[in-house]
Every structure is written in C-alpha cells, then in structure tokens.
Image (tube, rainbow, N blue to C red; front, side, top):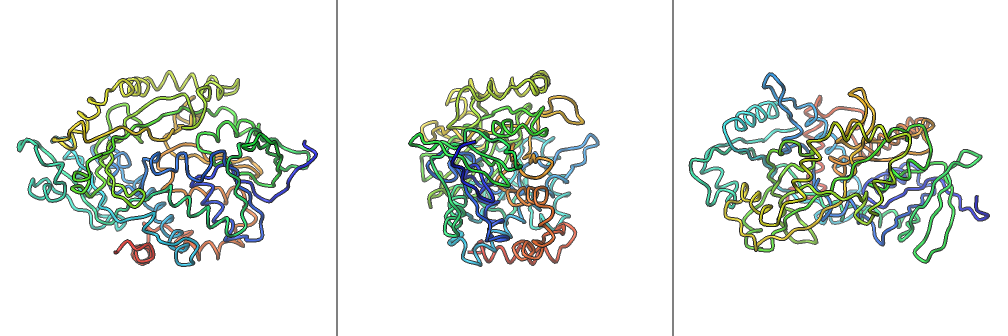
Length: 492
C-alpha cells in the first residue's frame, strides 16, 4: 500500500449515468457520506451514456418489438415489456423529484415528448403486431396505443416512410403518444454537476489502474492522473460503473463472483440525416423487427432525437465489431479479458453464438450504399447523400455460466456484487440507461441491507411507487404518470 492513502466512504468509478444515479440516490439518503468519483475522460457521460453513443433513448417497451416475443402457440409474451416499462416509470419518478427539488433544472434539456411507434411489413408480422397491441392495450401501462394498417392513417403518422411506397405493400403500425426521447448524456452531466455542488469530489482525467482488498477489509484503488501522478484511495464501498471498463476492474478485485464471467464487445453504427428538411418531416421513434441472429440492441429504428437543442434523425444501429471494451479503449481489451477461470466460458459462448458472429461479420462488410438500402425499408425515397455514418458506443455483452449452460450470452443489464456488499459492478447493455434507477436501487439493496429499512421512507419520497408494482395499481400509475408528465414538462 502507498504511504499516502486517501480515505473516503464511497468511490464511484466512471462518470456515466449509472454512477451519477447511484451518487444522487446515496447523497439524498446519506448527505454526510463522503463520495469520490474517478473518470478517465475529460467530462461526464462521454462513453456509453453519451447522446451519440447511446441507442437506448427512453426505452419503455412502448415500441420495441424484441421485448414482446411470440410464443410457440402464437401468443405474445408481454412480461418483459411490463418489467421494462415499470422500471422506466421509476426513473421518471426520480427525475421528477430532482426537478421539483431544484437538484436539476430545465428538464426539456434532457427529456422530450415523442410518439413511439412499431412498424412491420407482410401478413405474418402484421398478425404478430395485432396480437401484440391486443395484449399490451389491455394493460394500463400501455393505454392509448393505436393500431392501423390503413394507408391514409399511416401517411398521416409516417409521411416520409409512406412516400414512394408501392400501394400493394402490406404495412401496419402502432402509435402511442406517451413516449419520450431521453438525452442521457445531458442528464448525466446535470446529475454530476448537482453532485459537485453537494461536495462530491469528481475527478476527471483520472484512470483507475488497479483495485485490491486491504487488510482491514476496505478497498484500495490505484489512480493515475493526466499528469502521470499516482495516488491511492480507500473506501468501504466501491461501485464499478465504468461501462465496458467494469469487467477488467471486477476481475482485478478477485472476488469469487468475478470468476467464470466474460464479455463480448459489440459496437454500432448509425446513419444520421444531413438534410434538415427531411428531419422536420418525421416526428417519432419507429422500431421494426430485428434480423435473424441480430443482438437485441440492433433492432432497426428510425429515431427522432433531440441533441444539443436540435432535432436530429438517426437510423440504425448497424452491428459492428471492435475488440475494444470502450470507444476510448484498447484493441487488446478482449484478449486481456480472457483469464484461466473464464476461458472455457468464453469458448463455449463462441461455439453457441455462431449466428451472432455471422451477423456481425455481414454487418461490418456493409458499404455506405448498402446501409442506405436497408434504410429504404423505412424511407423508400432516401438519398445516399442525405445521410452520413456515426459510430456509436461499445456495448460489452456479459457471458457467464447459467442454468441454460456454460458460456451463455446475456443481453440485459447485469449487477454483480461481492457477498459482503463492499463492491458492485454494473455490466451489460440494453435496456441499460433507461432503467438506471432500478438497477442502482438493486445495487443498494444488495450492498446496504442494514441501511435500507432506515432509508425506506426517503426512497418513497423520491420514488412514491417504491415497493409496489404499478401494473397492479392503475390509480397509482395514473397519478404518478400525470405528476411526472407535469414535473418534466412533457405536456408542453
């Protein structure tokens, strides 16, 4: 251990939406705790949380077809959609509380109302969409969802998507007006600025190089600053919220829970519209169906976004591959993540996920013109010159041994904690940022079980539905949804 070690209560590694959310919750619950944040980049929210890197902008299962799989008997399973929607409502409640208490201002800088739509083509998928809307519409979380296959209605809903289409094409869509667009980069920066005002020490350009247990049971991290200086900090609790960088640090902890866990990096590419006239003609998030073998975050969507106060239009994401675990990472990240305890887990996954590998290879080989051809499934008259490609952030899918077998690829967000709750890591991808509040409440319940009973009343003040299921209480859902709509200025 270093001669000079700086002691604190909580260390958050990574200044993304997860650390910002956890820091916010803990500061509200225990303002006396000392919290330090270490981020290797120059600003908050520059990796997976950044608005140009984040495909999941307000995931609430209103339009994402991969959250409602079709069963063998033809019925539609809406359990995951309900779960994701509930978690997004929890996020809305916390954001509303923070706005109401002046912890963050100008909610329209990070959240805007936007219709969420699903669009399918062909008889088979239209039948699926009909069953989906029937199943969801019966549930108050999805009230107000409309279905149409009438070309006149679809032209009104989706003018640039219907223009130039063959009149004989079989198309159907659903539309729900209660959707939102969330700029998680802007939100992360707001939360971190608020934390700094509450005496949280946020250290940018500080990379964490190592983490190890000390003799007294605390965790010591080794940090290198931009000028090359090394410092050591200890804490009773450390959260690894460094996106793709969390796996490397988790492995360095040596905790049993870090064994037999691997990661597979998947990158994405979006097409961004250069023509503001086209951008202004489309006002919705429209999701289609994923290609066979595609990972869930590669469901194609034509996406109205609000970035830097400007309306933008994105299409994608197209799958990509880089061995880096972070956009700013190293080409050795994947190789370096393979350890004696996870090598067979990784190999088993590779053998099982040949369709994903094939899909990624095909995606990587696509030319710009080929990508625009895929866009024409959504916008028949799309011109190649109106669009340019932007590389999105890296997503590291968790690989671990489960009941389904060795080397199972996990497509969700995964929280891994030590048995004593002194260290926690957030791994994985979609739905990620949209469900950050629920994920961080999960971290707190696992890592601070003794404190949770005393915190409960304050948590309920921030998140009134805490401990309840909104799907079971229509009146409470309606009340809280209306309140968050007002606080977040979504009625404007």
